[in-house]
Image (cartoon, rainbow, N blue to C red):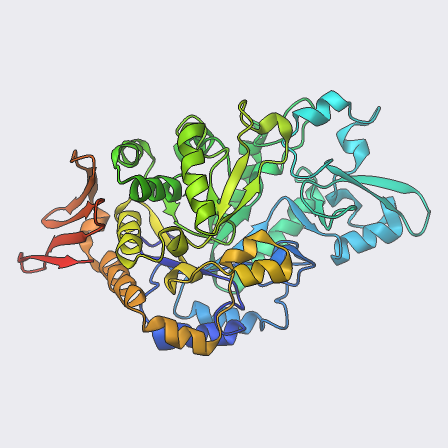
Length: 489
C-alpha cells in the first residue's frame, strides 16, 4: 500500500447528511473524483463519549451510522482511513466490563495497566505525578471489582469525569497485542488502507518521566505495530502533539507524521501579512507529512510551536482569533505550560471564520497548504466554508463543537454552490491532477509580503504566487502540450 499524493477528506460518519450511506451519497453527488487521496472517517465505532474517541470496540460500526458494508461501499471509490485509539478503550467496553466483574480472573485483566504494574511496591510519589504530562487531575481511576468487592486502580490518561470513561491499555501485554492484531485484521478485511494511531504518544508509562513519548520504548512499540500493519497492507499515521523535534524524529525513521505547525504559520502569515516565518518553516520541515488547516480539535499551539514561535507572537494571533469568535483548549499540566504562564494548547475555531470569511484569504490559505509538500487533508467544515458554530458550543458545553457542525443534505446542497467552495473544488482538482507535485519543491525568496512556491517534475512545472496584502493568488503551470497558463485561485 502506498499513500496517494492526492487530497483527502476528513469527516465524522454523521456530519454530511447523518450517516455513512448519506456520506457516500454526498460524495457521489457532489465530490466524485475530488478526494482521490481517500476519506478519513473519524471514529464510526460504538462509543461511550468524546464523539467516538472512547470506543467500545473496533469490530463493529455504531448502528446509527450504518455497518461495515457501508464502509466497504465508500471504499470502492476511496481509500479509507480510520482511527485506532491505541492508548485506551472505553470503560463501557465488554473487555473492561468483564474485568470490572471478575478482576484478576478476567481473560482481559492483563490488557489494562493496573497500579501493581506501574508501581508494585508503593503508590507513585507526588514528585512522580508532577513529572507526568497530565491530561486530567490525576492519571488514575479506582473501581470496585463486583465479584470480590476489592478496589482496583488503573491508569487513565484521558477523561473529563471520575472515574474516567477511557481506560488505558497495557501495550506490553501479549493479550493487548493480540487484541490490537484482531482489530487490524478486521480493518484489512473491510478495505481500510490507512490507520491513524490516535494518542500513540501516551502508550508508554514510566514513573520518573513525563510518560509521553518515552524513548526508546515508544519506538519498540511502533516497530512492532508497523510490522503487523505492513503484513496486512495497511499504512500507519502516528498522531503526536509534541515539540516539533519529536515529530521530526518520527520522520527520520520513515514514519508519516502530521504537520501540526502548518495551520498556525499559514494563519499568522495571512493575519500579519508577513511571509518570513512561513517560508523559513517550509524550508526546514520533512516532506513525508499529512498537511491540514483545520480538524475536529483545533489549531495547535503548545507544545507543537515551542521554540518556533515566541509567546508574544502567538498571543497576538490567539487574541485576534478570540475576537473573531474562537475558544481555547489549555495545557492542563502546570509543569508543561510555558515559563511565562502561556498555556494555549489549541485555538478552536473554523478556519474560514478566523480569516473573517474572506474568500480570497481562505483560498490563499488552501493554496499554500496544497503547494506544501505532503498529503493534503481537508476537513469537512472547511470543505463547505463553514463558520463558527457558537450555538453548538452553547448547546453542548463543549468548546470543540465550534467546528463540528453536522450538515443536513439541504445545507450541503446550499453550501456547494458558494463561490468559495467552487473555487476550492477547482483548486483540489488542480492539486490532484498536475504531475509537477510528484517532483521537487522550492520555496522561493520573495518580498516579505508575498509567497512564491514552485514544483518541477521533469518538464512539468507549476508555481503559486500569493500577495499577502490583498490575498490575490495566482497559479502558473504548463500543460501536457507545454503551453504556459495562469489562473486566479
